[in-house]
Image 1 (cartoon, rainbow, N blue to C red):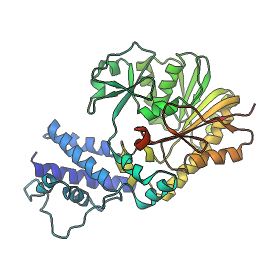
Image 2: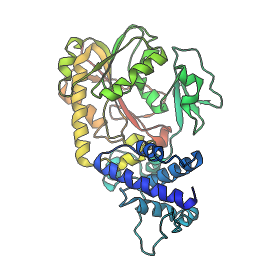
Image 3: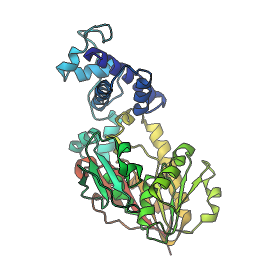
Image 4: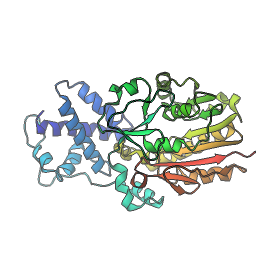
Length: 390
């Protein structure tokens, strides 16, 4: 592909990504994979170069751009080599017009920037939210210690390592053998907040594909009961092969029907030593990995997420035995999803108390701990540990 053809491909992809963000369509990674799946002529270097252009443009534009061309023009203003790609060639974009509109550079839509700063995120910390994320893995202690060449240990995660950027994780023998799992350092750290030991009864209520479930199985040394639940069949179905690969034999799964979760979990009432709630959230702490997520969120969707979080917390509380612990996690830096949710829960559940966890990273925030990319070098999280009355 010529430089112009690469720029044109990036514009076409950005058009699709902008539309998907507006209409709730597929994620950028999925759209990029589909695009090149029908363009076999593009070599690996071309794919990498186009992907780089796309994500650079996404990271640059705070507000959703009007078009892919507007997004790329904003990037071209900062890079003469990209500007030269607007060459009017047969497979390239038309030359840049004198008064063409550009996407507005920024961290996020204005209402989100305001909400983040109101939640105590310093203005100087905001740019780190859209920087590139590193590649972190968690070593599975249920397997022999793997060989990870060129990796470095993570300072805050006891079993975490950082691999070189661009590593194809699925080609590594350690991954194929189940000895490592991709997991951000921050995700590994906040998972430590749940008090869990071999022999315990633990519920991961919003397990998804099971990243934190697998970490819990290793901490429990494959002894005890570990129930992984979710309402998303597709995501939960990915846990079983991951558990088999990891040798995590204590994991049970339960698919929940939205709105009828309590009935499905009736035989688990007041049984669990610990319940983990990695709640559905805005994902404001994960923009490093999914920068187009800034364009998907609006106040109405945020309100729905907040209601869902409160519902899941109440459900989780019913499963905890007297004196047991409930850990609430969101990959968000918005107080409405973190600190305020914990305050709301405590106001509605007399007798429950906060037990602020001591973690190897993060800072005290309200009744919990907050990690953010600028200060912790991790994805952004809020985590709180709540203790059931005896």
